[in-house]
Image (cartoon, rainbow, N blue to C red; front, side, top):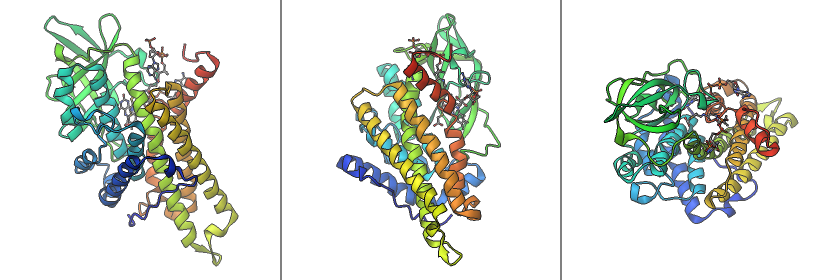
Length: 392
Ligand code: TGC
Ligand code: FAD
């Protein structure tokens, strides 16, 4: 891959809305991505391998538990800093952002919010430092968009629970020490269980042959009569609202992350359009290419404004789930469209691993599907504005 010359677009001077702390956090992440991610990421994507050596750096820039309090090893930052971290990491690669999203919002968050003090002290510092990696099991082979239908279940055996079932499409599963697993009790109530690698009957086969998110390790979670100590249930919240609450936090991070991928595509295409000569002119001088670039920066700017405002609402604890859905849906589609247009501006070079664009385009096909598909988020907005539920 070519040297990383990224220069971030900020067409509406949004930097003026950020605090010094926000800018410091972003700058540290941006430098880390340029130094550690960009030089190696194409090779790992081609090999479909997770670059484990990045775990330490992710922890050091605060990407494991950005908003988790310092006392548990988190970075104690606000929601805008969390968003900026996801933006910068996904500017490098969506798969690496996925690793950080899952660790922070889908593993540390439920332990922090729904766990007891003992669980927080046992797991959070190890997850924040990257000593342990976690994963989150909600999706099942027959229940993706409708997790309420899940069949994974546990039975009370007196001194322990017995867990059976399977989860699929689970990010980080093959490399995780712990899994937050959502399963039904004998009364059909959903609970979160902390399942640890090494428990008899628990396995995590790797998902092979992905054309997307190739730097993220994806797998299944199989539970065959796994004995779960009773101390491993998350005691402070149950029902489907518990996993969906974690998704709110992760979807918010993805809304920011997608902007990062779009900014990288735009910046690459802009530079290429100024350098690539055809018909004796830089291709950026042709109206058709200017239209693509002008529309890209317009959509990126709108997404930046939407997401910054969402961050303010999140900091004030006023952001609704439906507002988060709107931002996830809008920004990921915006990023896919930017990747597609940028790829065309680069002509044949657009499909080459010399540049990041095709990798972003392929990654974003997962991002538009996971954490609630594009259609599901539209229906969440539809429900919110009409009061009529398309899911029931
Ligand atoms: P519904 O009856 O609407 O709700 C059930 C209960 O949940 C509450 N709730 C929420 N709570 C918090 N946050 C939200 N966003 C919530 N949405 C709903 C709701 O109030 C209710 O509570 P209660 O107390 O009344 O029981 O549920 P439904 O069965 O009709 O389904 C609604 C639907 C379709 C919107 C929802 O299930 C959904 O979002 N489906 C999409 C599934 C999804 O997003 N899966 C993601 C899996 S994890 C993943 O993809 C990780 S990828 C990570 C990476 O690599 O980066
Ligand atoms: P389905 O639910 O079968 O949907 C198929 C199509 O039908 C979609 O277009 C959908 O929009 C549409 N559809 C479904 N219901 C409706 C409806 N009511 N109205 C209109 N259209 C509808 N899950 C986890 O739990 N943890 C993870 O870490 C995780 N990581 C992932 C990583 C990757 C790379 C991928 C690809 C997925 C991951 N997922 C994870 C799973 C992801 O959340 C699901 O793929 C997603 O929720 C969609 O479920 P599904 O694939 O079963 O599709």
